[in-house]
Image (cartoon, rainbow, N blue to C red):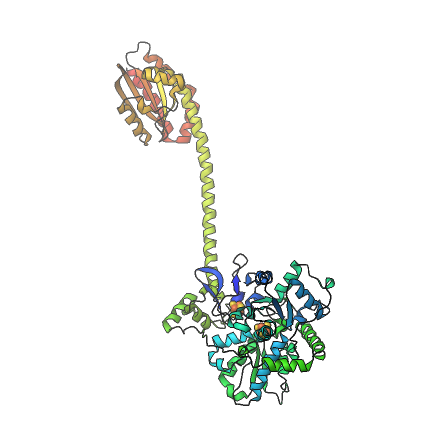
Length: 618
Ligand code: SF4
Ligand code: SF4
């Protein structure tokens, strides 16, 4: 009974918590570990309200089709016992004898009515009711109400009629007639019957409960249709007024007790709200009633949770009555009386209901305070009691949070205020993002402009390098040669010449490996952003040379000029002329560079002029 008949398909679940709202016993928990609801099997009473409430098909009822197929395949004799509400379910089938045959076609050896089981249960109820012992009973034909009382009104367990529900009562009679090895499948509109299956053992055992929805699926799968089958009637034992059981007042009529409001001794309550309310009132004021209670969790089994959805209650009601009329008029009352006499005292149709109290411990004041804090109600004091979480009041939700079966996220006002904060944060983050995007795009524009300008500068410098007769090279910010002229390669010596043959202009070669350490240090120094011109006389490959180093683009590139001091070919005046010429030729570019780079480029012009002066002095 504590096995779960309900599971969740998380793929379909939208976390709307409609199931939580509709579960009458709060058997569905939501925890911080998962946004998806989970059924607490021991709290569940198998009422199916959650299945009806879920619009996304995210709740799955335990499927029995394969179990039924396996039972039939096993070679054992299998009987189908049909709840009388089948007459209301199959409004599309013109004669009940057709669906009897259709059920046989699935492979059942026997097809019988649960109506006879209802008659047995009703008979025992009538005996207890007529006993006038002063004790008042609650009917035990509805498995869901039985579980509700055991778990949530345990003080009333002793008032439950000590009889099994109609399906196991039918099983007792069937095994007596057809043998103890008989396997029994209950075809039922009741999901609760699936959950109740473990309760009944021995001859009352039900091997599987197939819902009407599943039966329809099997007909479809096996292509079993009304127009392809002939008539066939139920196997014995046949029922009598027990077939009225799917209509709530029908059970009292099956007991052959008065349904009169004046003389009758039953109060009938149907539907989750009324049936639970009736239990509560019976618990509080039982003695004041002087009546027995006849309880149905659904609005009658005609609209049980395992029947096809959206069935029209009163059409079904009428169909059941029409069906019972036929059945009763054909009933051999003598045979029926004999069968009732034979089976009504069988020990297996008696049942001891047991207390299975599922009330959760009442939270302490501290635990409640913490729960209110989580809900933000400790400070706001907003107790809207809006019901949207599924708990009747904010206090009840706080209790459930403290009991670990709910979370504050289920509270609409809490979520809305969380959403508002989130919305405000989102808005301000969006604003920041937009302004950052604008800055980035501005920077990008500047960067690409700078890149174009740098390329222009490099081009001008490259022209200059190749116009000079003294050794000249441009070094990039990775200490690699970006360009150099033939004199530079010549002065650097054989190693450089070899590289130049492979990579003309030594482009990409590391300057550190080609010049003395003090020169490469100076280059590094200037690349760090230092300004000025550095001139050094150094001995290089057995020759005395003068090296002048200066920054071209701050932190990006430097220029190195090397002159062989003893080279007769190298005439100072010629250098002066060439540099002057370059300056003249590139004056416009240098001016542009000055404009682009500001101080750095003006310095370049100054430096070139300094070189001229230095050379003149020499
Ligand atoms: S079957 Fe009923 S009791 Fe069980 S979880 Fe669903 S609504 Fe709750
Ligand atoms: S009223 Fe009928 S169908 Fe509904 S829970 Fe009870 S026995 Fe099942």
